[in-house]
Length: 317
Image 1 (cartoon, rainbow, N blue to C red):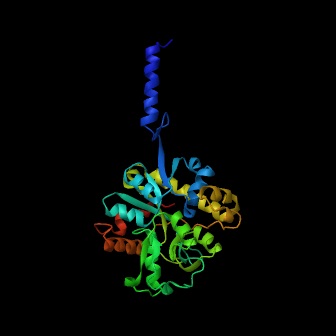
Image 2: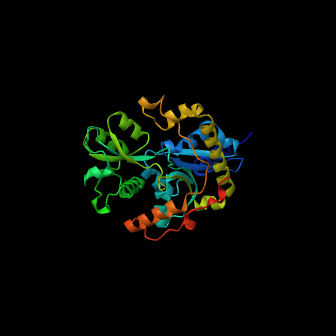
Image 3: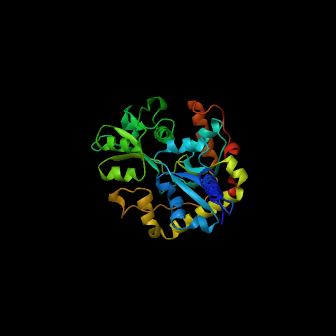
């Protein structure tokens, strides 16, 4: 029989291992991937891969860590608490441009001609019918984010001079949404599915980002993780491609997951279409370089970031 002091010592050693070596599955030496995610529509394949058991099928142990705001997620990635995350193209460029070694391994969603990610909307009852009609009235955004970028791109493409674009700061998406519907804001940029909800409550779409190349979402890892575990990164992308195929082939089979994980508003649970996802691919060079130039011009990043510095497309299945 093992003496009591020795049993106690063994117990504390086990507790130490469980608490302070979370990235190793004891006895299997299996890495646990910590991946940050938002309750966003474009993140649906991640939730499907988790709910349908696709990660284990590809030999992975993935811990999806849900964040309520992009800022919290980005801080966690920058601090080293995450191995990777779901993001727009602005986030990894900001991190890379400020000396964080981040790599984009794939884009997982973009705005083709038949779908939108963001829209500029006028408040219910507004007489404004286009962005040109705003005539200097402020549009609510979150500055130096993809929302800010989309607003500027859409307005300039519609013929609004850059110097006439007026904005007001509104970081919290939920508050921005409510303020627009309550008439406290003349106009605001919102993401789907809030765009559809706002329209159902009387808001008017002035312009949306369907076809805008900069509106892409991406899968991002730290370079340290990709360097140490390239096969795990490849398997992760293979699992997400399988999730994409499942969503595209049988969208009704994942509606419950979408409703729960994306926090779809009650009014849209039955009729909101399940989005289709393109085949995973490297992000578009032109879009990424345009965003990098925009961030540099704004002073958000200190140095120019090239496509090759931040993209690794070799892991895509």
